[in-house]
Length: 73
Image 1 (cartoon, one colour):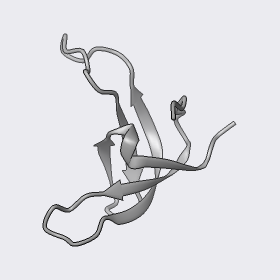
Image 2 (image 1 turned 180 degrees about the vertical axis):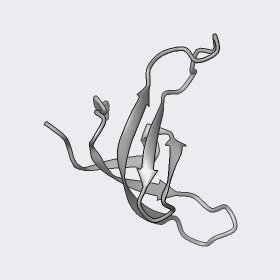
Image 3 (image 1 turned 30 degrees about the vertical axis):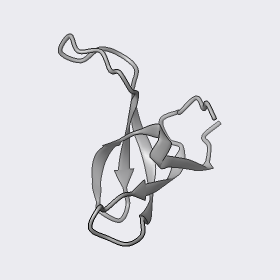
């Protein structure tokens, strides 16, 4: 599913820990969508910066690991 990510969207984040038996989930809010080149590097896969409420920090996440809980309008 294609989705137009927006800053402020509330999302569920799927975290993969390869040592764990099951995936873990947390909640966060989108802080930035990487749509431009950074340091002359173009992204092969888009990245979304998400503030993770559980970890209390911003992580860059692939959109396939996100699920919209509440979109910002």
